[in-house]
Length: 178
Picture 1 (cartoon, rainbow, N blue to C red):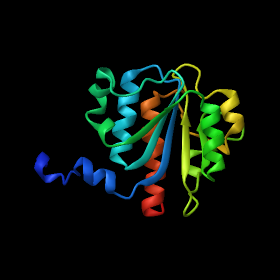
Picture 2: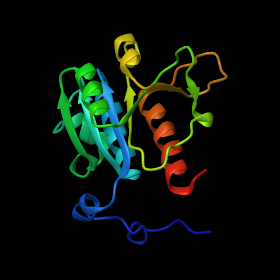
Picture 3: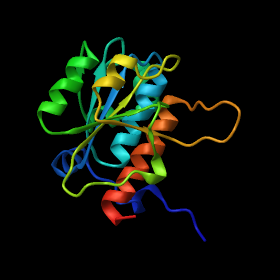
Picture 4: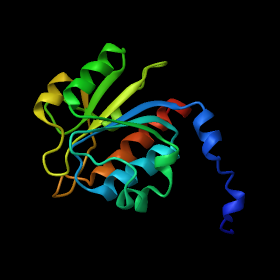
């Protein structure tokens, strides 16, 4: 077994990425404090051809040296926008017939492994602040909630890790019907 060279990875150019068919997922980040977490989410979004990221509230926006440190150029490929109020974003997405799901631990949440993808559906995934999670007001507006099952003592994952887990799972289900 041999590691692949960068030249063997069939990487898309920025233009090829922008013209590629996107995975019907929108990532909504609300009040994310860590610039490194934001950059990491951009890299995840790039890896799975996510449609766009909506940065809400105090979430910093590119260009930013600290975001770039972990995004490694993904801010140039992934579409993004900033909005002041996550509640308005959720309302707008729902008006566009996009299914909006909070990623949070709530009563009656659907565990990630039990969540099924509806064919031809577009999903917006709302991730909240590193300390407080998705606000109760935002949860109340969403169409549902997905919870990542956790068996240890913390029951808390880093926001960028949570994003990677959920986006990968939905991407896999969308692309390979798993």
